[in-house]
Amino acid sequence: MTAFEGVKVASKLVAIGVPAGTIPLSIALLDMKGIEIFPQVVGTRQDLREVFALAAAGKLRCRTSTVTLEQANDTLAALGRGAVTGRAVIQFEHEGG
Image 1 (tube, rainbow, N blue to C red):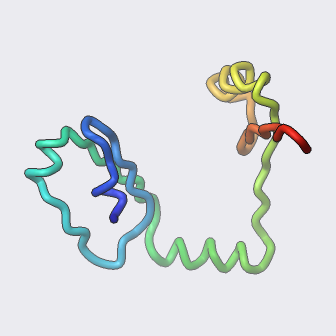
Image 2: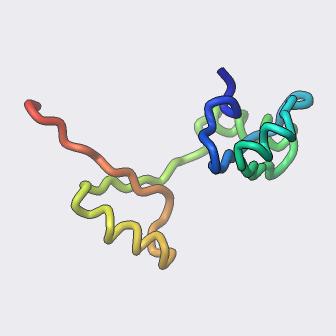
């Protein structure tokens, strides 16, 4: 199953990346299911190769902060204000250890 085939009726599909070729889609099926596609293509294939090379060389750093589920609403508000640098990750506690 492709991502497109798994999308529910009246949903949005965000396509991230630079495809190597064409992507076959049924316009009729898009219309019938009420699916919207939002492409997120920033940069070129060469840009992508350069970023992978930087990552392989250890030159990229991912900034993350960990928050509890109870802090999720405050963190979402902080994200909306632009007060979070990098990514905020919710850490869920598991029962029993």
